[in-house]
Amino acid sequence: MSDNDQHVQHTWQLTRDGAEDVTIELWADGETVRVDGGEEEATEGGRSMVERLLAKYTAAGYRIERDYPVNDPAPHDEPVEDDEAEPDGGPDKCPECGSPVEYDPRFGDDYREGAAWLCTGCKWGQWVTV
Ligand SMILES: [Zn+2]
Image: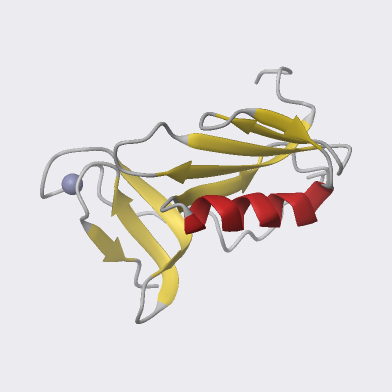
């Protein structure tokens, strides 16, 4: 495990076809916000700034590929029942194109929202049935 991202609290990854991926970081101080890719910038304003940046990029055609806590400040001394943990039984790779498959606990489309396996290559996806 690396110490290099200790300053980061949460990361959002945005993608858009034909454009460089954009990563937005909220730092552990709760104030500093950094954007990598796209128009790189460092600013402040914490989560409300993140929300503004996310709105700006999604309006520009980006979609949030995923977001995740980098360094969860809460100690994990006790085993936590984490219902966002990746379940067993997912496909190792996409049956359509063979690309790696990612687990997304909060995937949503127009019809429903929930856990799903998503291909990192093509648009293939499969809802996780619990
Ligand atoms: Zn695929």
